[in-house]
Length: 606
Image 1: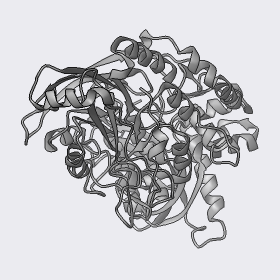
Image 2: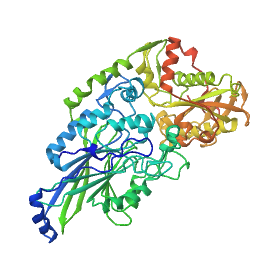
Image 3: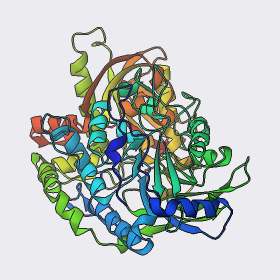
């Protein structure tokens, strides 16, 4: 089924980049159309059509089954395999089984951020440079034959210019019905994609619409890039606006590709009146949807059925596991009655990438770009006196996390020198992102440091008072479960209380404090001192904090609304590499500090 996706390009109100509004249509042969159409209009029943919509999500730059941080094949405890090269093999398998003219392939977002591969082509050899390369994710997805891809929140991490360049390199539209121009409130990206399937012996094709919805949290997490340019209304309201339009255009099947989980919750506070993970809400509240490809939450959902409150019909949802570990299949049965196609049934299932081999065609296509990244991350930037590890960093003040904090402190102090804020003490926030990161004794490479700081966060300086800093620490201390005095200590049960992920727990350097886990959450911070003296409530500090936290990520108190005195666009990961390169030798005496400990009624837990 040939499809020219380039033919429907339109200019965008935001940056002038292409906006695709509809796909190609393939009808019945002209000689057959009139008599067949007359018979069908007369009500001759019996025509049926089977359609399979395949879906991936949260690829995060994973092309091969390769761990750039370990310089080895990817491994996890569950025996998973990942990457677009394996997805490609699964897609070919499904097309062979079902027939290429009976399949579609879509994605639910978070495509161009997440691995050293995507970082390299955003920052080291950027696709935005004059004569720059084609993004490896665009090359792979074009070759595999994606029909449409929804925007994820991480699509905006490198700014709109890079996103628009990536969009121009794709042979498929990037969909985002709720990504609108901040001034006109008109769609800044294609809201939907339409594709028609010819049914042998029928004058009426099956018309499929894919509505793309992205995450409203982008307005918080990437405020620096989108504020004043784009707005992100809620998924439910935009689905309610567009689904009736798609039905009016003659869509027989409506699929939503939503970069939004199913839980109905948000990881950030009430800074926006929209729910982050609202895919199930969309199914429940907006009639006219047949299926939803779910993304964002990094969960595995083979099939979830939600009854729409208005129509009483079931909507089928599926979320394949992230990084290309799974592929969702929506098998849709349609029947033609009185000249109209209607959906008779929808079933969802998953296919596992570990059951596939890497497609040699994709391997050959991207080998050179992959090898360039492997060479880059294996560059030696210094030496380490001792091995540093994050294995116990969730519950012990470990030097490897102090390294992050020290780099951030030094960068912010240098930036504020000579300003009115130079006299304020600088403290720094850092999180134990990984439980397996290690900087081995001996040569230190970029990949060692990248494994320590896996996100593309940048650095911001905010002013907090002593009272606000204590609130911040209390919020962070919710990460620990309450532990009665004398109770046995199980470190695996001690952390992640209330399902708080590791990245939502913060160290703060530059002050000293105890976290008393015998106390209830909200009353745990004890002995908060600065330079040996109790911290006054009105004392001012500059907090060196990553942009995700600074913009409200994980809903920490005060920080999003605190005065911002400095910010930059250089990644914290890069700053760490620069710091280590300048030092030459990574010695804990240059960065390690004792800032906090876990206690029970004043007695150390560990």
